[in-house]
Length: 148
Image 1 (cartoon, rainbow, N blue to C red):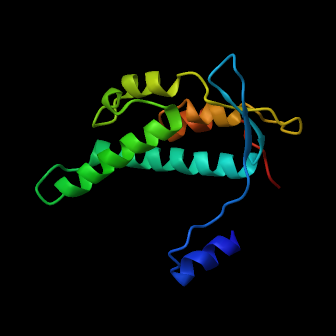
Image 2 (image 1 turned 135 degrees about the vertical axis):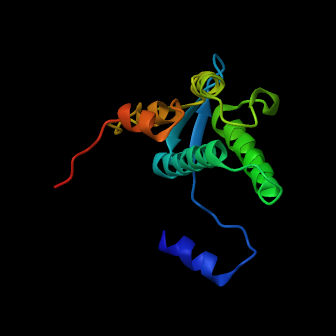
């Protein structure tokens, strides 16, 4: 993480290399099998999900007026893009404003990424989080590791 922070501080216009991710595709289904890069991929997908939940919260509580119009349009566009990435959803299937029922249908589509690591103890946690529409649902459907 320190390398990325240093990269951002320099203001470089170069591309940043996050690391290698190895996947495999089976001919029999549409799922991608994740072999290496689980932590990077999981972190990135959780970041996208957290952004989506936050954007949904803002869109649900935003005051729609002339001053906020461009901000709301931008948030709607980002909402669509994140849902397209996370759920392989078509833009026309995604409503402008968060809709719990429609969003739940999109979030419960087939899993696009399966964790095939033999060392992973909590293989289903990412899918459980991605299938929820809000923070409370993610928290309720995830295993919590207690720290001392």
